[in-house]
Image (cartoon, rainbow, N blue to C red; front, side, top):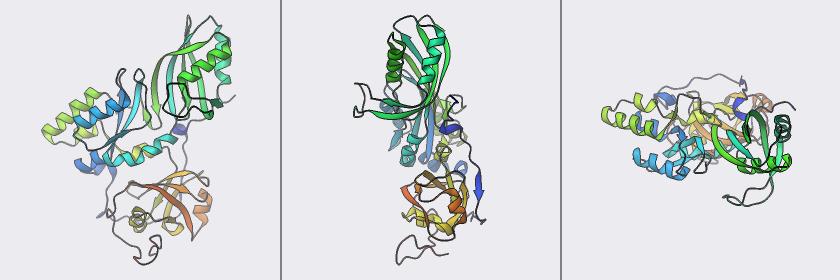
Length: 341
């Protein structure tokens, strides 16, 4: 069976619908934000240690950085290590986008009996593509059967009864339940011995921005001492980087404030669109400067967005940009999405 491409590896071309100019007086490129805004709309690619819960780790960062609000994308069990996306203040609004990003783990599975390597490889491949899974007893969700997609199960090594393998999967997949089910098919039983998350959508273990709690504390203390924003750049990325895995629509400056007020996106406001968008797809909406405006649901396909001259192409799911960032250029009477063209 061929490997299924995970969401973070899909590269879609940006198609041009129209050209326009962006006014430098309003907004700014994400990496050019001042320190306060850079933190407010920032994310941290944290390497979670074993021991504390994801909530405890987030709370420690909140205390270290003196923040009012903080969140995280994709809970890790206390004993599990690896990539834990942290969202700071206003960036919390885009946490839901991480649900569609997919995950990758490296797992040590302990077999309860001896099994030949060839048979292990065969069974791992049987658990690729779409599988049925019931969450384990110790879980935070309702225990009902649901489907999850396994992009790949790559065998890495066998040492006695310890199997090391790498799994790429849809968000919400329980790896300890996957190990249990694999053990049942092998006929000897198995359990998850150790687990590390190496990827959560655009957040990668291999990135030079994958930092520890000690890194966060040190670099933030250096920033407080010097007020040099370059120290923030060492461990914080703009929230826009966390949306790269989603299809994108780029809009005119004149459409931005209306969207910030909750208007639907109409065809005349679109400048560029990612290929491959299907009706119902979750789509991110950006300015020409690369700022995230909102998350939305596509009402038509990419090709239709390019071809349409009028009509609604996407409805908003969550506004990310504060109102007033761009000037109001839409009619105050009637519906907000009746933008002045």
